[in-house]
Length: 147
Length: 147
DNA sequence: CTATAATTAATTGAACTCAATTAAATTGTG
DNA sequence: CACAATTTAATTGAGTTCAATTAATTATAG
Image (cartoon, rainbow over all chains, first blue to last red; front, top):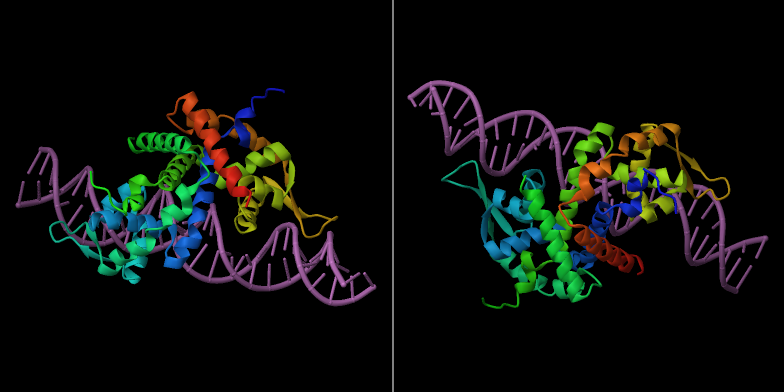
């Protein structure tokens, strides 16, 4: 086995690449179930926040999802067109826009409730591996956010 | 702490979401360095394969990167426009297209060689965490591929 | 050998992602 | 107060991602 200064450029020595590839593969797993609800993965995680918060600003939503307004605005417009949320500019601070869960959006929760079990935690991992992964990913996210 | 049948729909209970978010955050880390080379992350990992293989079919390249021709074709056209690869339809099997590394593409390797160190393994993880993550991600990828 | 099936890239269209910019509103400071 | 700096969403444009389709070629079955 020869050693080269280029070893660090080999695909098999990357940590970012399998992260990127696994993310896409796992998101793909959701598609058949999300298709039944006629929403995308990004819309799904947005609805997850809405199911918990009922009302939230675009900024706070974006911070939770690590997405900026360039992504959130079209996603929220799409969810609004489907009737699951409404958007209203705040009266106290007219720079900010609040998003509200509608009754229809609340009802969608019932249709989504089985999705996590169906996707089976996304993976073929053991409980321990799942927990390890969870902790490591949030460690990465905490670091990334802090700069 | 109350328990609800909707707990599985909470963002904090997802494994897929932090995977998706961490992937995007880490890819973002590469941008300042890749900007200097005027390539994107997808083009970068494509070049990683090219630096190793020198010549490879579009199909094999897509399998290594978990990307289909719908993604690979425009990426390869872009890399060809920059002069780093050429594409030629195979004479033995005219369905397949081979991609070749150019001298200019080989030279780009020299400019990229410091990127992995600069991104510092992508993260703030310990060596052990990095190894754990690596193994778990490839376990996910092996599972996804086999169906 | 011929018809059918499978393979390979490319194309198309919808949606996402992000950097950069813009516009409006608010906050901070002199 | 006035005005500069900051904050918040929205917009724009380039690039990615993927499902579905198409066209050309090759493999296979009868």
